[in-house]
Length: 107
Image (cartoon, rainbow, N blue to C red; front, side, top):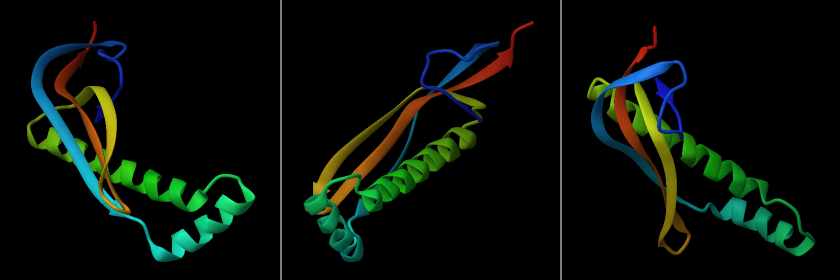
């Protein structure tokens, strides 16, 4: 599956647009990670525990979006975007969305 943030795929032409596809996940903070993060807040620097948590959430949302596109017969997703929102104290949703298409190599 080709996934791109652009409106097209280099070297390919879009032959059919299948529609919006999306994948999401909601993740909550973990008390163990919060304790480590508190230390980072005091001394400064990257909060790697949260970086890892968000990276995992992003991958899961992408995987779910790709699965939805595969189910409807797409071989590519264009205009991929990400959004996040807080759904509860300590919990956030990460959403990946894009347009499922069928592409063919240009001749």
